[in-house]
Amino acid sequence: MSRSVRSKRRVKGEAPADICLLPMEEGSCGRYTMRWYFNSQVQACRPFIYSGCEGNDNRFLHLEECEELCLGETEGRPPLKTAQ
Image (cartoon, rainbow, N blue to C red; front, side, top):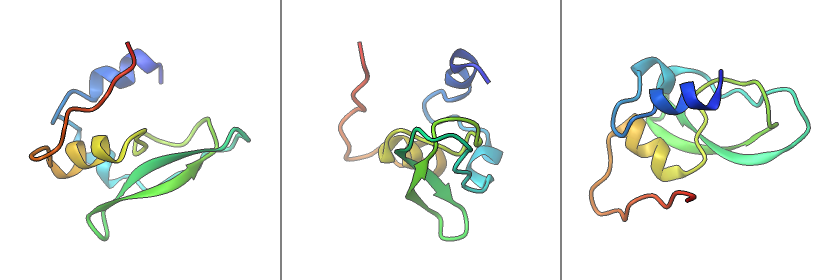
């Protein structure tokens, strides 16, 4: 999925419910980096090591993004910093 298509699906507060229900998938490459996924069994965002490619859309760069989209939590948090 292209980055532009994926970003359009992740509009503030509007995550398709199925994204948050997907299992954590590490992917299959060797460019390891930390990401966040929503663990639907415990209803919390958890860190995981992402391989850098493949996997699924239950993968977030920031904890706050995961919580906002999967739990709807935004109060008391400063806005996410985005690259300009």
